[in-house]
Image (cartoon, rainbow, N blue to C red):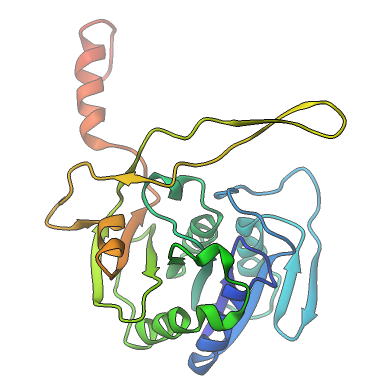
Amino acid sequence: MNILISNDDGVLAPGIQALAQALKKLGRVVIVAPDHERSGFSSALTIDRPLRPVEISTDVWAVDGTPADCVYLATNGLFDFEFDLVVSGINNGPNLGDHILYSGTVGAAMGGRLGRLPSIAVSLCGAKVRQYTSPDDFKAAAEWVAQFIASGLPKLPPRYVLNMNIPDIEEIKGIQVTHQSHCHTPKPIIPQVNPRGYQTYWISLAKELQAHDMHVNHSMADFEAVAAGFVSLTPIQMETTNAQVIQDLQSQLSQRHQVVL
């Protein structure tokens, strides 16, 4: 296989290094990732300036853009060969619940799926994860991903990606197919005054998650599975239209406006 790896923590992040090493046994691994951290960029593309990919070592490319930029370049002409799989991560921290809407890790995987490639977003979940600085800290999770891929990827409908969250524990109980959970109300912004006297604000996402409809279609919530010691595997769809709401909206508007049904 030709495997494309990207992330939102940066091309030199320990998570992506561990993942690349683990996946090399499955085929050729090419890293195309942002030249510095680009967390929270979701699926954003840079269209107001040119991008500059730089090969910093063999099959390792740094791009002065977003995670989605990296995957777009790699799958649309940067190379003279095609990829078979896109893996984004391993993210240094969870991508659970509503937070996936902001996630650059998930955004990179979405970019791969737009290119009609099987795509996986991978994150490591643990209380200490933000202190990790070595690829060894991600080695167990990376080996888990490699074994998962080697055993045969599950088939998904078009325009779906897999969002995988791996708990940071010594013994993983197994894997659970999960649904996306919901977050508590976002945390308030954090005001600060910078050294020049200007008022600034930090945006901080809520870290606590809560369950609504804990079991949907007989599945666990993603954060519930991780908390119980399972790998969470959530199929995420790129199609965001809600068919049921369409019918309800048509019914409401037909009572007030001339709507073609």
